[in-house]
Structure formats: C-alpha cells, structure tokens
Length: 358
Image 1 (spheres, one colour):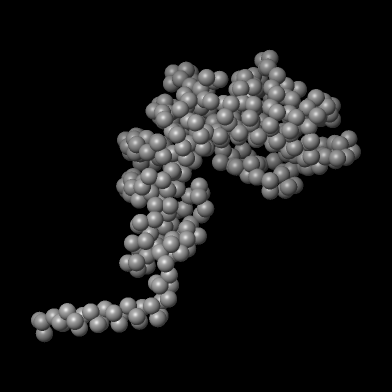
Image 2 (spheres, rainbow, N blue to C red):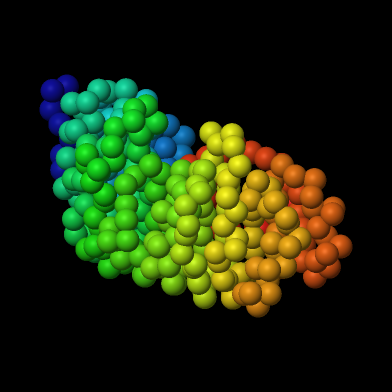
C-alpha cells in the first residue's frame, strides 16, 4: 500500500490520460499561438483596459487549467493595459507590480487615479512604481494632485497619448506657478494630449507634433498661442471659461473636427472665439450656443474666411438648428441634447459621433 507504481506503469497511465484529455477537450490540442489569440479576444482591444479582477480580467484565465495558466503567464500582451480607480485597496499596489512584471518590456496603456482612498503614502508609492516604467508609457491617463505633476515628466519615447486631470485645482485657489507648468519635451511620439487644470505654456510641450488636443477649463486668450504653435492638429476640443482679453488669430490648416464648449461652472457670457479662427480643412464643428450671439453671420464668416468643406454643425441645448438650416442648405445643422461635461468622453474623436444627431 505504501509502494508506488513502477515508472513504466506511470508512463502508460500518463500517456493514456493525455489521450483521454485530447479526446474530450480538443481545445488542449490547439497550438499555443492560437490559444493566445483566443485569450486576446477575451479582453478589450489594446489600448482599452480589462478589469483588474473578475469577469473579463486575464486573471480569470489562470484558474482554468495548468496549460492555460502557463500560456497566460507567458503572454505579456494580456497584462500591458492597467486601470486602477480611486477606490483601489492597498493590495492593488502588489497587483499593479505583478501586471507590470508580466507585461515584460511591452509598451503600456495606463489609466490611474493617483489620489486614491488608500491615502497619500500609498499614492506616492504607486506613482513611484509607474515612474519606474515611464520608458514604456504609450497611452497614459492620470488623475493627479499638483505636487505629483512635475515628477511625471522625463524621457518617454513611446508615449503617444497623454491625459492629465488635476484634482486639487478644484478645491483651493493656490497659484499655479507654485508647482510650475508641465515640461514634456522628450516625448518624440506624442500625438494626442488632454489637459484639465494642469499648468502649461507654449514652451511646455512639442505642440507642433500634436494631431489631437483637448484643453478643459481654459480662457481662449491663454490657449490661442498654443493653438497657433500646433499647426498639425486634426482634432481639437476646447472647454472655455469667461475671457475678455484680446487673442491672437489662429490658422489650423489640417483641422477637420472642432468642439467648442463652455465650462459647466460659467454663468455669464463667454466671448465668441470663432472670429479668431481660419480652418481650411474643417468638416465637423460642435459649438456651444453661448458662443453664437449671431449664429448665421458668425458661421458664414468662418466658412468664407476659411473656404472650408464644413458639412456638419452640432449645437447642444439650442433650438437654433431649425432657424439655421435654411441659411446653410449644404450643411447638416443638428440640435443635440446638452450633457454634463465629462473629462473621459472621447466619443467626439470618432466618425460615429458626428453621424449621430442626438
């Protein structure tokens, strides 16, 4: 009873077990490369992020069988997109380190809130971990407090998209200059940028290489020089606050889609900025009705000055569409429902967004 089977007998049993497994579970006979493709179809397409745990997370693939576990652990593409919310728990830090290790040297897609419920010490630890992998950043979306901004920047050769939201700007009135403007010059691949309450100026970034730009809570006279330094923009979204200062004229020869909104907190009139633009390639425009004091005249002037192929105008929260349409028979003028501003709303960058009328 204490004796074990002879080696030859164990070999026969193992071989027979393998044949039985192949008979009843033919998926186990698939090549590893095909199994990896099946695994990749289980999670969202990169750079979107799967859940850290639960259904849809690559961690679910680790508990099915030893073969799949081994393949998943040796598939770095499964672990390269990581999303951590404000409600993260302390053990999440170890999870992040594990995923970063499993992703090996692949470029990363990161969506992190660095002001979490874990507290400042854990937040700083999390930031330190992310900075250790900055050379692999490719798509990065961070919610930060101002002291965390300056350490973020250094060499990031693969960085294509950067989105930064500063939390504490909403809660105090400290001078932005206390922490200075961002400086991200060593980012040769950067093409898309989104900033909300993050200090910046014309010298902050290589604006000329950007093709997509979103600026929240900004006065037009401040962002106009930045736009003028960004001649290759194809898409641009501005969320404006009150401004009565003189602005420079902006010519964006490649811009095809523009969204001009007004910050939710603005209660007074906002100076229209349409007259400051020449946009020869503009096809799609969304504009807040508060920026159209004389809508027909302002749109006609923009079209005439730019000689642009404008084909769709969207006006949220306005009934002006029915009045404007006869004046522009070759342009679709859409009335759309007003929605609360969301920092993470990226739909305007898609063609589907511009085809939707509500």
